Image (cartoon, rainbow, N blue to C red; front, side):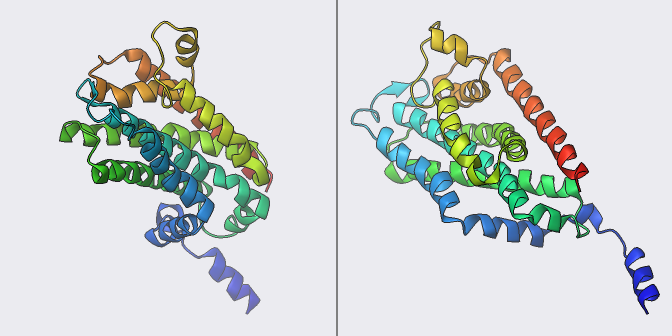
Length: 263
């Protein structure tokens, strides 16, 4: 009987797509949304920041490119929310590793690469929800004004660009201890937001602006704000996003291989 059982297990077919299926994604997403801290910091706080800083008296009437200042702040808070959401979702692998959940999953037919793909997919879902939440606040308050196609364009640029921070979160999740991964990353994300011009626009030619050009958020911030301000596209912005995405992805793959090699 035991020999037959072993033979049956060995003959068990490998699941298609390495075990990726809607049920797995749905369960993982539900687990994320049940985490009150995740919901507060990724979906609620960006909306609160927009309401605090974007609805300042006079911003609605103050024109800025193809929109107004309120729209500019809304885009900033949307991309900030996406940055925090994708980073924290990717970094959750650190907590799962510390709890032994990653090892448990490796005893299942789930392919390790599929596990990473699910994390990236969930990060993008959470990033999209963060942007939708902030933009919904912009619609409800009736103070963010820009052409309809720019609402869609800026949201898509911010959402796709946040993939860089999904890779960043994964990389840091494999590098940092699980119990304080976000305590370390939180202040770092705020600093990156500052250097990206999300909190305060950077003056051209200033020392801070010259330093900021080499940081991960700068290129994405410029790309997502350009449709609103009417600024011309600079290749350097695309290079910045591509460089940091490649670097964080390579770091995540390297740490992932080292982590799986220990099992």
